Length: 65
Image 1 (cartoon, one colour):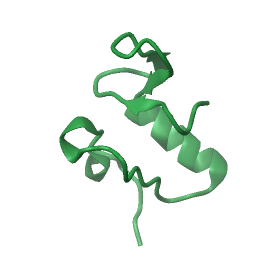
Image 2 (cartoon, rainbow, N blue to C red):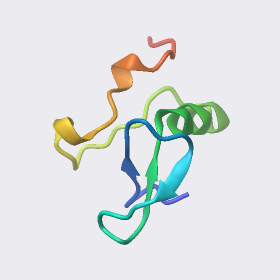
Image 3 (cartoon, rainbow, N blue to C red):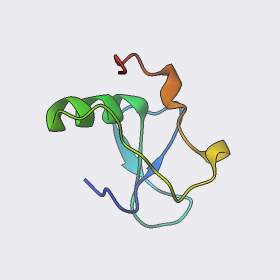
């Protein structure tokens, strides 16, 4: 899993090649949920990307503190 360069993408399941940039991968909301459960974390923060191009984490059904 490419945690540094992978990009979130709406409407995909799992992971897919990033055909826009030609490098890294896209990941869907289900991949975020699986990753959080596996790593036993509640939140992943992506601070280097403009909000309009990200997956809306408020829509994911996780229990927040």
